[in-house]
Length: 226
Image (cartoon, rainbow, N blue to C red; front, side):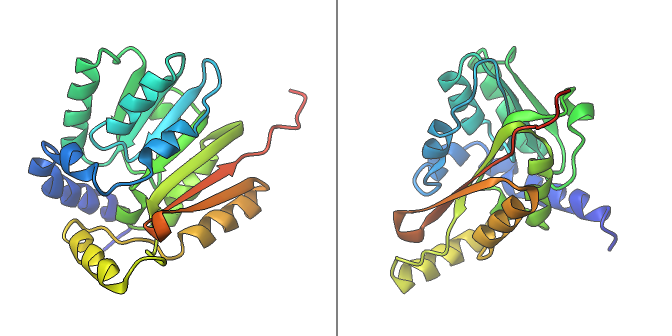
């Protein structure tokens, strides 16, 4: 299989998984996608800033962030057309369409100018999506490339449940596999490596005894006078 076929196959898979799940997604996921609201609170979007969410799903996060930062512009990318249908409907109900733009695309390789008419963003965040994306490491690189000087990348996802009982980890992993979700054991290492590569700062927190991991990469400010 060629690499160009992978996004199409993944999009088909995600549409199949969420064609019906999207209608109850937010109700069911609020009990175990922990740390999302902490990520949103920590975005600290500058006045008039721009924010991109990769893997925006139903629009739940982007709507909450848009309410919290009313002067910012928001952009969301997702590979599932089914999820975007739900997200666009939710954004319209909340009367946020003037500040929120969504597009269908691959988070591992996207053209922000073509999709949104913007090259860089003050904040980029990824919430419980890296654990579902094949070649997820490329998403981290693509997100950092989309950051404006002085911007930051915020990631929350499943940890390794390192402080929780083994039986809990076994049950959780079994449940997640039903939705093609795989917690990334190397998430912290990849984030730290990418921050070193780009000369950025790196902060990392373990939440709820390792149930979730939260990482923030802060890009360097431009030293160019132009």
